[in-house]
Image (tube, rainbow, N blue to C red; front, side):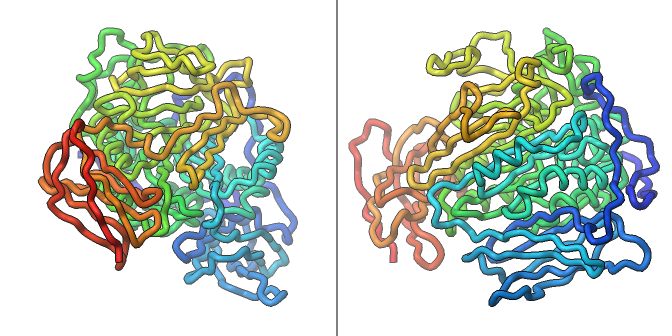
Length: 609
């Protein structure tokens, strides 16, 4: 039974530092002196540092972040938009002193047009930007993928800002570790705003915290338990709950409302949710909050409970079935999310880290590590449960965390039977990692410009197909950069690009090995064991099709097809229910019998009202 942690926060305004000592970092930064982290003293008419927003399902949510206010200054902000050529007040929000933030929620919100906005403070500070329309009519929806904003470089991000303005993505995704200053998130968050605010002010942004953001070297949240060891490997949080919640509110308060806002243990809040933009449905997951800690659960086979370097270890012995990854609540959410396609053409999961181990060489000395339990390749059973849920919606996975950019396809029972994943590189890399497998691939990808590609096992015995990797070495400035994902609705393809720091996108090309293009249906590449009759559908354009196995009652998969014909693949012989359409315009056809692979093709005529 874990003892309760005293919920004590000592605030030193304006810097909002915790009085507790920082836990020791287990990731060693390069041997260079970091510049001190400060909260600058700004003129009183420049109090608003930056803002973040999202719009989804007719709701606008926006967070604004201020430099510290002093006694006597107004504790509220006003959100205004231009209507009929004049600034009109839309909403007011109080300023919270814990994190110096104000949060707006406007419903209903008109997503059909662009809206100039400004946030004002009575002291004269004004912050302006653009709330973009929902680009549902665009064929290509572009997402910029970032992670790991290392504190070994506190300088501006001018090269990234220049490139993003040229590429003009529809959504910015920051996958975590926006801050590496464990007990100084507020000051680090303002620095993040100064670094990236210029591209955040006029487009929707998803930011989610990872371990360093909430003061951990590595995090196994274990459903909100309290950790008692400085590495956190026993599972849980060791920073005070108000601090953790302040970080999550700062980074996630502008996201769509949580699916289920019930806090986990000790009152730690949750934020997992979904966001719809341009016909793409993004599930935003918390892939560390419920994850089980390895200490005391897995025999220690290295210098730390989470690092394995014993060459004699048994990969299967560390697959502890009771260990969790996403937790029951998020798996339940994914079950409904993958079946819901109203206004949606493609799906994507956003989370912190890959569901596989891709890093073999770690740290400045490039030490070899056989398995790292911090990645989501462990626990294997929990990982496979997550992938089975995600692939039912043919969703691709965008993530970061590893300081190593990769494009790979997950495998559960066979190579290629689960989704593709694109992990972004570090923005600034404090801990380099590289893909350098000792084992030869089971199948080499001869079409790749990179040598170590093809079908492999990771250190946990998970199957993966490596398509592209960008190792962090001195020759490429430790593999720093960012990713671009392009969702092309007309062809149902997703293209990944990797851009290194310092590149000029108008002149240069992506990193060697990129771009990589996959098809939507590749994200459920499981080989069929049979078929259902070919569906010939009338009365609906590109309808949603959902296949339900009647013996279990489970949805096998769901997607919006292209055209009016679709031959559903199935993985067990038996009887199925076919659901076509959505909402009031839906047809349910039960008792559809499966056909063997070599059976003549049969047709099933379905008319959607």
